[in-house]
Image 1 (cartoon, one colour):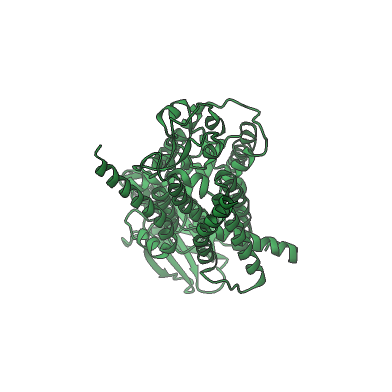
Image 2 (cartoon, each protein chain N blue to C red; image 1 turned 120 degrees about the vertical axis):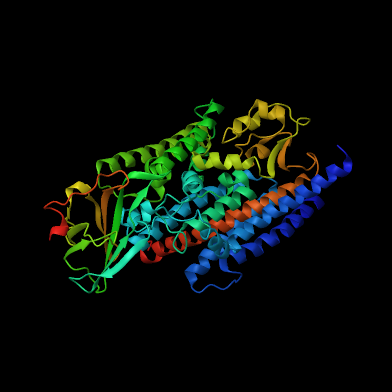
Length: 382
Length: 175
């Protein structure tokens, strides 16, 4: 009884700063909202994030609650993004007009294609605006490089507003239909990164966005005006259905994020310098391999268990930590003792990762809720 | 390793972790000033292949004073050095709410006193024609409405690699 009350009190105490952060970042520090739709969207988002964070603290489980937030974000982000585009330009399709006027929103994945020309030619090969418009280049670069320092590849399980698609699909079935997925497939994403960085630099065009990005299916895509565009449309829809829906469903792995996404590969490299790690206590480990089976990005293998830490492709989702029957896996701050201060380390990491998730995506969630309320009251999302 | 060194490393690691946590807040709270700083970095500018390059000339059309013509510098963008083929971009910006239906303009893009080409287009159908000296190997690559104005891109070979011009009957100079 004492232990439950103590745990509850401690969880509520650590929840309080997060609630204040939620009020600050979701509504500018005020509890007042100008209209009822905004008020409903604010309070729902506030309760949603508040509950998830409280449950992470109280239950001691990370991944279950993170995944609920992550999948919800992916769906609501797309509703918010697509309706925003319809408001701005009347359609989710972009035409030559948007490209010629340099009005295409810059997404974080584009970073992988602009790096080489930025270094060699000192220009950005993307038809966007540097500052001042919706999803402009400078703020997005700030977020990408900031998160590389703060979370490393943690971004892929805590911040990315696309990752929830394959994560959601990977959680539908209880058991995988395809049980064996080769860990070697992780290197495909690095090959994609190198290939698109080089080809984009020589073509002076973001080729992954143009030809391969599966998330065009749930955001914006090129207006069909030629055979080449029909071909591109078939490619990105096939990749979306294959990598984000069907394969994750059959394998219970995040196949797009773990084996194809060039941003995932770039973030994995940033994991090398990031201070937050996932460690395996070799003394406690009974070698049951539950962690290798559940890891959605194939980031724990037998060698990693022997080494005592997850591979550098780890997205810090916490699934292996939650699954380990002996509590042998935990978040870790590089340079600190392995078996000490585990709760404090988890709390620091959760504050950083959850805050990032909430701040980056809170606005989209609120906007999507307003759109849904519009649909209920006016019969239209607009 | 010495216990004191281990402890120092541990303390530094926790400080660095706290900095990582603060970074999350800083990138959002300081988004506007930090983005402005990033925008000032020399490598943060959109490639001229998309923007059309810097505007080097801006003047009113001789045939229609309500039409502003903006001529960009020629763009021969390549990863290293210059490409063999590039383009020159022009914008036709109306002062009146709508663009005139027919626009025809002679352009001297390099301001050397010699007319380089004549571009004629219909803003309702988008039909565009170019009259230029054949030896300059120019052609229309883009002619489209962009927001409230009309944009034309004329593809041209890089003069570094192109042969010298010989005056002929198609040259707008002979008008």
